[in-house]
Image 1 (cartoon, rainbow, N blue to C red):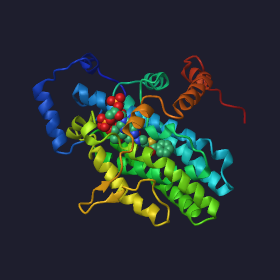
Image 2 (cartoon, protein in one colour; image 1 turned 60 degrees about the vertical axis):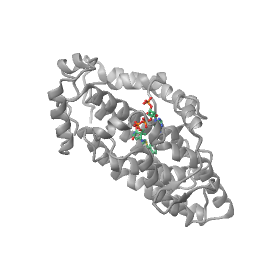
Image 3 (tube, rainbow, N blue to C red; image 1 turned 45 degrees about the horizontal axis):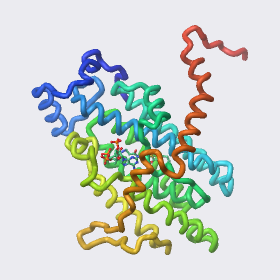
Image 4 (cartoon, rainbow, N blue to C red; image 1 turned 120 degrees about the vertical axis):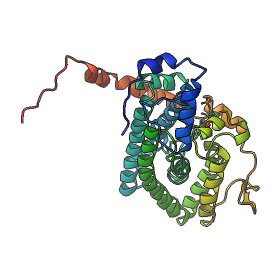
Length: 328
Ligand code: BYC
């Protein structure tokens, strides 16, 4: 699925290059224009490699950190059926992290380096996972709308240019579509339930609305990386386009349940573009730079997991350890 995970000596030497061989660059861009997939052993510009590492690594971190808010609800799920579904979903999310770390490793960054960068705060992960899941309705909203937003992003980018990332995204999208059904079922159940159930759902939508708008990244005019990523077909739609697609698909599904959004200016114009109030981009910047409601807690849990799992990694990596076939 992934191909090589080793950086060739030549690629390692080129990592600090700023000027690319024009012929190779032209041939590379022609391949992208023809819609070919780039594979790990192929020549690629250093900036393409660095951008992919940044984006895939952030995506991988988002999956494993994203498992935490939902994970806290496994022991508090309202019934056995919901608990089973949530356990399976959380397990899937961690598995997505594994797929994505493997895809990022093909570009020459080791998993250990990625994990260290997450724990030191050098690498980012999705803003949405720095908010608390206060009630069971948060789990419904995460399952329906956060997973829905992720599917919009991932379905588009699975048609991109880097083979290992696209193949990982395709697999992830199959599983995410089950998560979405689980989230939708949960949202509809609460929306058609008691007064209290509707109230906690409305409260959760009120709190998740702005983080969900932030999920697709800053407005296009402020996006630092979009131009390059779109030129090289790593991203196939801009942040604003993806956000618009999400609003188009999901706002009507919430409104039909007679649940509202906390924004009087949210509306679709005749040209198909959604308008909304400024979702406070300063809050977005604070949250992605480490100062959100749960950033410290999320990293503390990951540090605990890293330390608690060290003996397992050491045992697996110990070349003198031999597997003993257990007695029957
Ligand atoms: N959160 O130039 P821009 C899931 C950063 S997990 C944090 O527009 P780009 C799930 C951006 O990194 C799926 N940071 O960036 C799991 C950059 O900072 P740096 C999560 C963000 O890359 C468990 C700066 O802002 N999905 O679904 O062109 C349970 C400028 O932005 C965010 C992914 O990870 C953000 N939301 O476009 C349930 C998708 N947005 O690196 C569910 C993969 C922007 O220069 N990523 N930043 O320091 C992408 O598709 C793209 O990276 C983005 C941003 C569209 C998010």
